[in-house]
Length: 359
Image 1 (cartoon, one colour):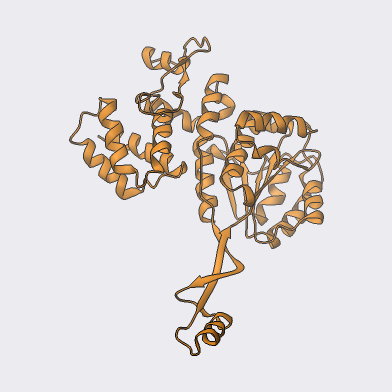
Image 2: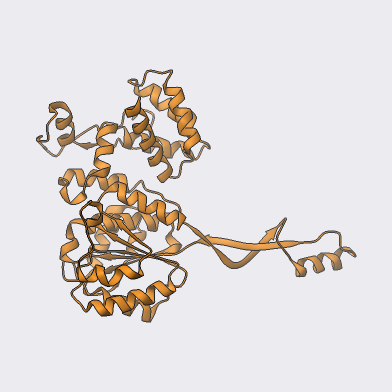
């Protein structure tokens, strides 16, 4: 039962990332329902989840896509999207109980437990087919975004007295029949993401860019993405393509400094000279191997921290228990960070998305 609870909790987490209101209470209702059903029957699991986890008709297509992705197409006849799968390599492991399996490039349905294992694997250590599966699951990520108060106002039943509308109504009707109120509107807080595409980040760069694509697709007007290496390059427009593959192809044509060095201090100075980071969530995805002057990086990080609402550094090596920020770049940046988080696996990107939703 504990394994079932872990599997369905992971499924509910995937649904929430896709925008389905599968909260804790609905997940508990699902577990109670499954206690009276045959959990080995994919059909019963499908309908139990659909009836307990979905709140509106808009949730149904998202639920079908996530179910097919998470359980390897066990209910593909219901879902109207193509069946998602992991590689035959994983299927062979499941059958043999070992780590060595032949990968002939074809796909076999993934079990929920295998999908959960894949979520926590370091993307740098995946096979090409496994990495493709992680990228496909990453494309389903639809995280929320923390909101901030804007300068605009909207009508409200409570709030600040709207004198102009109140007086206008009084002049039209001849007396003050009703006091009008207003309140500030809210808007998503802007995220500025800097993705290190230097040689030392090569095993993670593509996955980070696919995460950036998911952010742009979720909040296209409140996300700005730049590649950093030896040059600062804006790639937001390229990432607005609906298809992740097309977007990554356009990005690869745009970035001129793939697999070079990292001069993050100079690039942050250029960014802060041209743009403002005021009120944003600044996210820097890098391993901290700075080829420039660490003192310059520290000074620019201090400027960034004064402007931004929050500064988050994503380091792929942070996912390991023995990691210590010993590189010159990390030591220079660390005093100015609000968060230093991992960025090596799908689970780490899901946690980062949750952090952005509540920053």
